[in-house]
Image 1 (cartoon, one colour):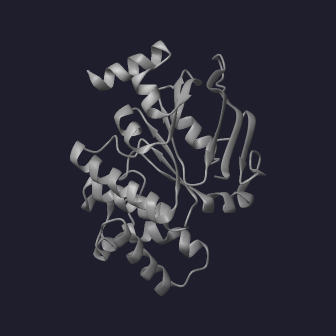
Image 2: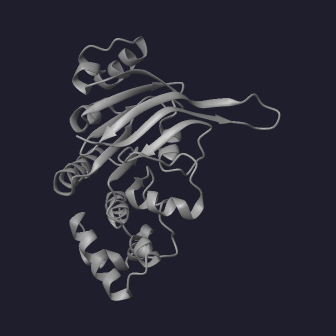
Length: 253
């Protein structure tokens, strides 16, 4: 499989006046191949979400290199990032908060299509197709975020991410705000999209059980550094690091 995304020595340092610099991501390297799902796990504050923002260029990289399909995208700015946003999309933890409360779900899903010059009728048709693909009836396009359940809103958020036909979907704790039953349904949807669309995933999660079910490889983060990596079954059944053992025990206990 060809490599889609390549991160080399990614580092992010946050600075704040009167405080010591904080290294949220510390020399992290990995690759993502076409059709692969890479899990990133770790407790809160381990750097998972910061990595997601670095990969989508929502946050500038302090040190290191990020390449997509061999092209260096580390320092791209503003209009240069439009192509990147077409290839890499993110689904956030809080589905309701990720939509504008004053606009319908259909408006939110179709925004990227309108920005690319698609005609109104074509946008409406595409939005209906995306909703159906994600398990929602086309009537949901007329609803507002507060008018639907968390699971329905997350389905709409996934539909929005798929609108520009990305090659990589980054799920940043995309199921953690949902109850167990809805979480299972969303995971089944992601698995279906992976098979039908040939998507590659970065699956950021603190739940090793979900990672074991969904991911091909996994990185374990602790204080911004990768402390262990490998196949999920190996990591969970025979963890080498004490920190990983604690994560596994937290799932099994």
